[in-house]
Image 1 (cartoon, rainbow, N blue to C red):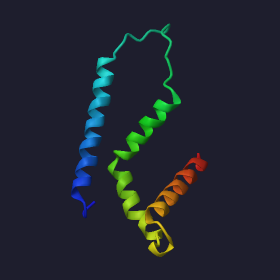
Image 2: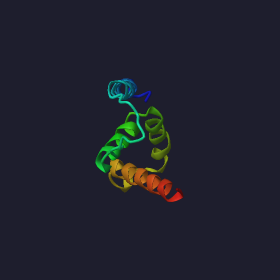
Image 3: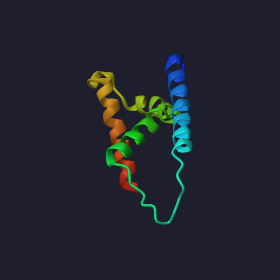
Image 4: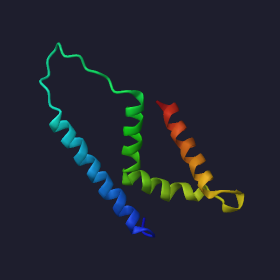
Length: 99
């Protein structure tokens, strides 16, 4: 993040804009809560996209990946981007198994 301060600012302001969007959506979609009102669940796609957006705009996630994963990447073994994606997916799968 120190090497590319513009990227940090984009993530920071993007995250702030997303929080404002969530707050406004909540305020504008207020409905009276009744015991009889059926709650319509969101689709799996909508839940997945919201999770991806939340993680992409979270600076802590970006800092983790930028600080932790490069230690295990070897440029002489092929594509650096592919190695980082593979390692990131491995960490994510390990986290899912612990649940």
